[in-house]
Image (cartoon, rainbow, N blue to C red; front, side, top):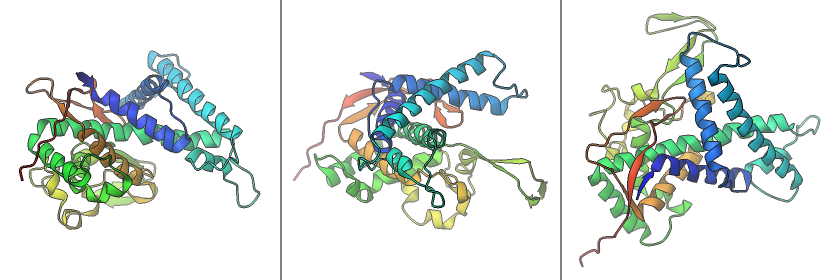
Amino acid sequence: EVRDIHHDMMKVTLAIITETMFGRTMKEEADRIGQAIEVGLKYVALKGSSFLDLPLSVPTPSNRAFREASEVLDKTIYALIEEGRKREGAGRTDLLSMLLAARDEDDGTGMTDEQVRDEVMTIFVAGHETTANTLSWIFYLLATHPEEEKKLHAELDEVLGNRLPTADDVPRLRYANLIVQETLRLYPAAWTLNREVVEEVEIGGHLYRPGETLMMSQYVMHRDPRFYEAPDAFVPERFEGDLLKRIPAFAYFPFGGGPRICIGNNFALMEAPLLLATIAQRYRLLLTEEGQEAEPEPLVTLRPKNGLPLRLEKRVREERQE
């Protein structure tokens, strides 16, 4: 069966983020939420590259679409918050329950619905779309690199046998983790980030003043031949040794850096290899035709343009010869 793997990865990571962060699943709303997030990402990318900064109140087609998408997400988040308040004090340990239970150290007040909404929206939007993109690129790279796929299968058979992977297996899934690292190098979920200059600074002979914006691209830096041999090649083994100690600190920064480093990095680095192992243990994802190429779409995140059709095939384990 040919499936849009990016769409499938969006649905599974949405299910994971809602279960772990909000204590419930949202399978019925998955497509609607995914569409709203896509509209929002395209809108932000459009605003960032436009010479005209029209306010949201101007009823352009993109402004109307963005407002509608925002309403969908707001309605979803506020419904989760209302549901969470009804079960407050029930001893639940999901993130939403912890946010609702948090109290100010000085006056003992809790967060308003709007404050909780802002916190939850960050996790909700960023916590599943980025991992879905990473997994999509992983399966595309494995589909175009059968030798690396064989190495992964050999590891899964050795470490897991026929059982499902657990969090305890993550350190033992050495090659799966290398695949995740290399994929984040070639197709970083965040392909660029911005920082605003707060005090005058000279970098590389250029003077930057307060209020100006600097853009740093992980996609460009991760493919710099000064730091990576065969920078455009998919070579998971490159991360086996002391590569990250030999190259400059920010020659590899898929999760950003500094005080605003991605707060979900550890969650993602556990989730991605576990999902990879769970799926690859049972299925192979193959190209739909020879020479099929996936085109990156650089929005806020780096996703496969127009989805990622791959052919799903049940994996048959090779019997080892005694």
